[in-house]
Image (cartoon, helix red, strand yellow):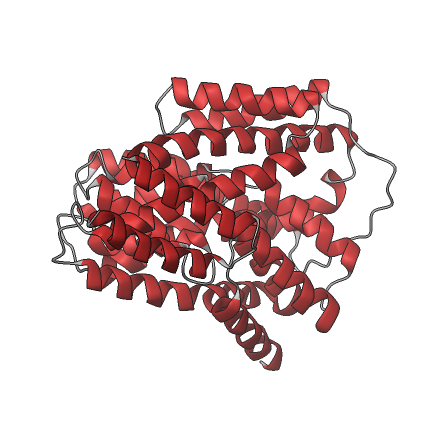
Length: 392
């Protein structure tokens, strides 16, 4: 019980203070879990991050869940997720509540949030490309992935791009296999892990069939957000186009409402996937719905929990294979390409409408990349700038 309370307390503190997106979250985790509390070794932490980068879903939340499992079992993993997610969940609900009744199409400060999203996604492309697509082979995979994602406007094309990138990486990229691997701590048996992975697959296949056979907004919402969490690689930024295709063309909300929520998600600590709370709350035909927000958040994070709990028992063997690490390099490059495509459409296309909008986006990008301002400061500046642009 003491360990469970400890896991919840530490993850809640991280959820309240971890600004800056998934890469920053991993730095916070390393400082807290590796250096300060010594719950996990440096080597094991690096391998855990590699596993969560390979799995679909929010990498930082998956690392938090995995560390919670290692510290206090399956319930510890659940409490680690609750603590890390709860603060941003509450803040996104508060934003959604304030947003109701506003004309989002003509509100300057909300347009400023959309412009902030341009700068944040551009920074993510810049940083990830420098690390994951800095060679000729990986750069070619990234560019081809971006072109494919833009050419075929389907929410399922991302899964195909990731699979193809992994296959190309396996066949064409060289792995760094000159490393000694330390076993990861795992309290889960292989049999239990197989049950979690089977549950993940059954839900992925069964939910769309149930959605077709049965009516109801709740089931449709759960199906859409579960698929988003199950099929997206690269974390919160890359999930943007998949969620947009799920909630805007269906009429659940407008494009402006969607991007306003995405912009607000940059200003709160914790995982970007809690954007689902906002989307579930404002979605038609039942807006202002706390149940919808809870349903969306549980659905989008459930695949992450099932995949992490299911994969940990097998990771010690798989991660040592050079062919697997080559495929992982290709997958990471494909993620960069998908992010490039998302930067253009829908982020840029929906937010940048004039020279003043571009100037504000450029300012926000400079604050992030040159002056190293935290995202919440950049969002505040963009919000005020959006108000100013409205009256120019």
